[in-house]
Amino acid sequence: MSRIGRMPIPLPEGVRADIQGSQVTVTGPKGSLSCRFHPDMEIRLEDGRLKVYRPTEQRHHRALHGLTRALLNNMVVGVTQGFQKQLEVQGVGYRVDLQRDGSLLLQLGFSHPVRIAPPEGIQFDVEPRSKVITVRGIDKELVGRVAAQIRAWRPPEPYKGKGIRYVGERVRHKAGKAGKVG
Image 1 (tube, rainbow, N blue to C red):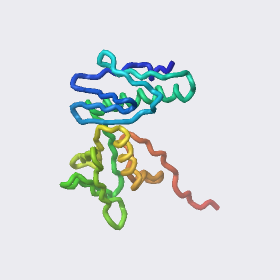
Image 2 (image 1 turned 90 degrees about the vertical axis):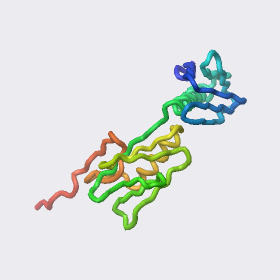
Image 3 (image 1 turned 45 degrees about the vertical axis):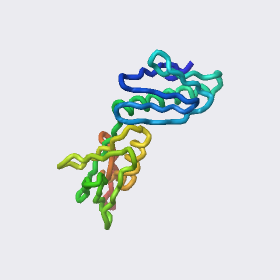
Image 4 (image 1 turned 120 degrees about the horizontal axis):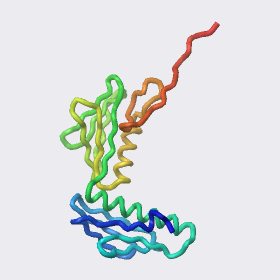
């Protein structure tokens, strides 16, 4: 049996799960998330814990078992703690500003500034006097996608390391042009 799939998901105080067939809605202090899972997976609420059961030992059922449990756990963690990704902007003349409406205004070496509006459920924070962007939200998949879209505007280049990178991301540097030999 799947090690991840068979682990129960405890529901913390103040979190409620509603199961309607393959549709699960998790509500907590930070908001509500809803997801439709594969109809073969059976999700039950037992003793204040969510459990996922699979019908057979077939390969695709074993794969769906762990996936369903991981997605449910991400929903519970999202409505209680939330998720965040941090990006840093590096480069001379590269700047990031948070606008009053919550959108980001990025100066990335283009002829024009780049404005990024947060989608529903996402919030941006910019630390003053630094070039660190924090993307916050309750949906882990949406937080990761928005952070990747911001990074895609100017990924870090390997010669000087300029660009937008995740905090803690290592960029392998290349040597650049060698002098003439001969």
